[in-house]
Every structure is written in structure tokens, then in C-alpha cells.
Length: 107
View (tube, rainbow, N blue to C red):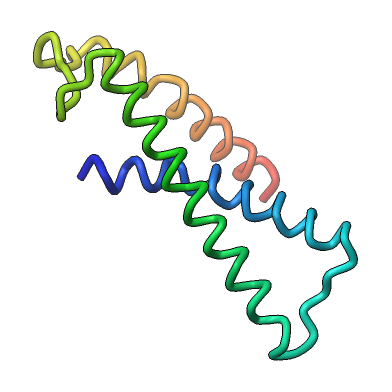
């Protein structure tokens, strides 16, 4: 589960890296027009894999240096009280009521 959450978290980072690599190729005048350009695109994917792998290693080492032991630490089981739920739902309920009132007046 943690691996999937990390993957989702760093997907944007990897896509940003891919976009920077695309801009670098375009700034050098590269445009993929035929099958002959596939080796360049394959090299890009390979370089992206290596960069992502190395970034993952650095993130893992940073997590270990901060005390990560394979699972996320929890001090205690956290539960919300009834008052906290009411406070959290108050603003969305007020906004929904305002939208319904505005819709009723417009009709």
C-alpha cells in the first residue's frame, strides 16, 4: 500500500522530469518523425528510468535517516469527536444551503 501511495505522490515529479527532457530534445531541434527516431525515444525512457530509480534511492535514504522503519509511525489511534465532525461539516452544509437558496430564487 505504501509503495502505491509513493508512486502516486511522485508521479507528478517523474512527469515533470519527462517534460523537461522533452523540452531539452526540442531545444536541440529533435522531432520524432519516423521509426528511425525510436532509438532516441528509447534512450529517453531509459534515462528517465535511471533518474527515477536514483531519486527513489535518495528519497529512501532520506526517509531512513529520519527514522523510517518500514511503516508510518502513529503516536495513538486518532478519532474525531462528534463536535469536530459538526464543525467540519458546517461550512459545506452552509454552502450547499446557499446554493439551493440561490437556485430557488433564480427559478
